[in-house]
Length: 308
Image (tube, rainbow, N blue to C red; front, top):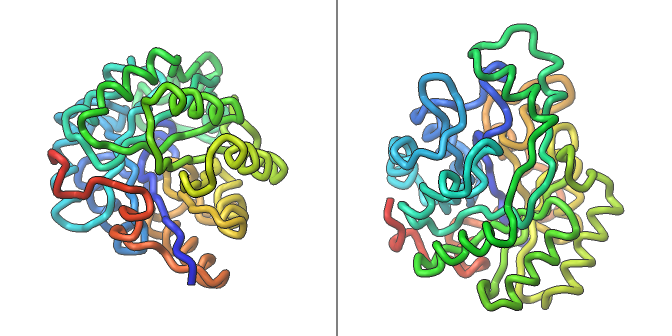
């Protein structure tokens, strides 16, 4: 049976508390759902932080410190910290937690992109916290910024930490941006390329686009130099990651990417999504990679070399 790395993105910075009661917000909720997702089969836990009082996205290392040690003590999953944070944060704010804790992995958006999620606000009848409505409905004016200078700053800041990256590519051009930084000597294989589909502003969740993204990666990089994974937003999540697995890729699920477990039904937890994709993978003859196997596949430094 072939091994597939399951990543789980447990909370993100797009969805807000009013959208789902299952979305983890407090440090305890984030820790508990992360551990449950790992127990369900996720080898990598991708983490953002929330203000415990109202669920607003935060880059504060002090908030991350309220759940990272708990996750590390309770499971062996690879901890992957965001450097994407939220579209409202500066690059310094987005990088602060990763720079402090020096995790095995952190995410890295490989370019700037319009990042809109205002349509999600249409189904909210009552907002739980005052900040949510303007944050969501105002996203028609958001740009997620990661210029070449920003990316170089993140790479150079993290270089001595031995941290590897989840290279999030929201469009074909982001693969070329990744190749550019390889040519500059700021990145060395193996790479972990996370292809992102279905975000309004990025490449659409069409199977032709998935094939083209994979073919482009194969043109730009030696096939033995990278692992690739797919995430898809909203209703595209499960069908699209299933197709990626059929093509030999790894998969990412989680409430950051979709709040649903099936059409019209909210997921109760991140673990529920992990369990579903694990069942699908088993039917295809795959089994989830363990955290140790994922570390080997991705060339990670090991949990004993983080500062959590």
